[in-house]
Length: 477
Image 1 (cartoon, rainbow, N blue to C red):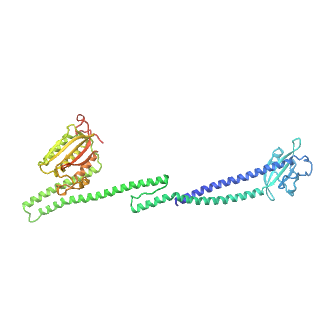
Image 2 (spheres, helix red, strand yellow):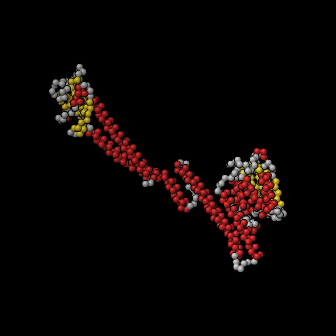
Image 3 (cartoon, rainbow, N blue to C red):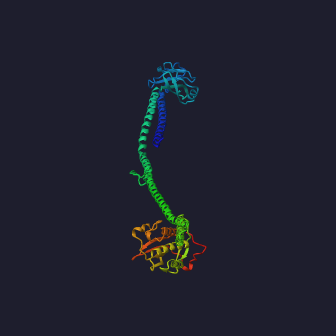
């Protein structure tokens, strides 16, 4: 059953019950009021009879006074209950009186009761008749037929019944139309939602031109939900594309050294054996490719751990000793390059010392691979607005502008020919590690050629308050 039909039935039932209650109350009110009016009329007409000067309870029969109206019946009784006189329009019909009513009249009270007559119901008014000494000497009964009131009430009853039915039908029809008009925007929302679900077009929005009522708020909320779904759907699509690209690139990067190793192993197993020079070259290639494969797997594991959301330590790390150690390692790895370090000895940052060292090693190795022999690689540190900026610059060819948006993507290499065997994971890993330490990693082109990567982390406490990087009580973020 639809909401529209339920609302129509509920609306019609409420209106119908209201009309029934009103009709019943009106019907019984009219019936009661008509009887009360007739009682007052009979009480007023009883006056001439009660004041009759020739009323004698021992006179038989008592000549009745002319009634106040032709439709009024008059009858008198003695205190013993016997009829003394009647008006001519009774035609011998005796107006009844009960024993309780007779005793009440003898006590000076008036009573009214409805009785059944030959022509229908009668309203009988019983009143005491008093003599000049104010003694009750008889009973006067006045009656009127209730046929006109019953006919009027019957007509009223029919009018109320048919009127209530007609009003209920009309209001139900009106409720059906109003419910349809009120639910039309919701129907449009339903149709739009079905279309969006069928087409998976989360860029569509509901067009609601009405007031900001419940339906308007529903449309606004639905549009907000669609915006969130669109964003989530786009993120999922991007994540799936990135995952596919990652799997494809990882498969490619892993396949190359494995293929080389497999080929060299086939050469080493040849019968007759290959020459000693070729054998040494095959072993050398196998060793290099194995080391490359190990580096690639380690990079993948490090990248996976950084993306898993594992928290890193947050503790004060002195920058100057870290730079000196990196420069020493860089001079060993690149003896044909000049490596320079500079930084204030009191500078410190909040971060993970191992992760920070890994980031700087990646940047130094990247600079080494792109710096020609004899050129300079520099590591610098300087305070900057509550942070410490650590810069790694080289004198290579720099990065092309079109490659800048992708330098932090996985497996991306701006110059594959000069990548030096890199898998293109270093900068992606570095950015993840810096972000995990609540810092930033950005690229700054240098005037005159070369590249400069800047790591910015929150500055630590002064030197005299800084614990060594190996202190067991590290501050957690």
